[in-house]
Length: 205
Image 1 (cartoon, rainbow, N blue to C red):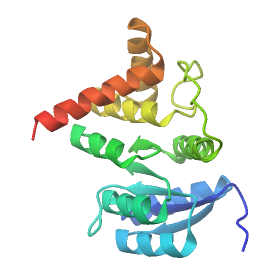
Image 2: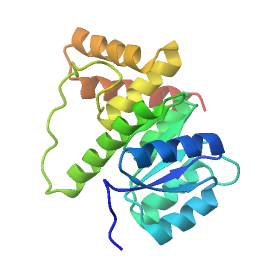
Image 3: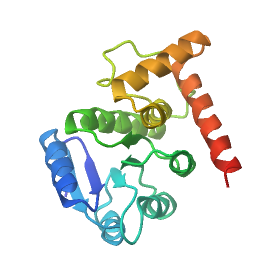
């Protein structure tokens, strides 16, 4: 059966209210949604329904979002993004190691999640296209917190939100200021920040 709309998304969260809110908002935005409230069901649904993208909570009873992501990557080749209230250094390092296309820090409302999902689909489409060097990502000048962010930038924004108790827009502005101050592109500055987090995380164990 042909999929209608923008694409098929598997949404996984053990909080039923969050799950219902995400599912409703994404359906309203034109996506076909499959939902699961635990990791085991998520893996079964991914195998049966073959979603285009998975949106995963990290901390769940039983299989974690990381467990599900590892399975999706190894056995289904399904891209995934994380939505979590946790953004400590070790979590960010693992998100990056697994190869998530985006990482969003709760609390977020659906108006912030839909643009991030759209950016993830654009990133996926770009990766599936002909092999070509990725275009340089210039610093964003649109209103902070509403534009689509490149995955590395989105992860770096999540780190700054957690570390400095900032909103998404303020964290993005801080990253932009850092990039401008060091005369770097936004993506380059984000990559440096995430590398520093990984070093801190590995030295702490």
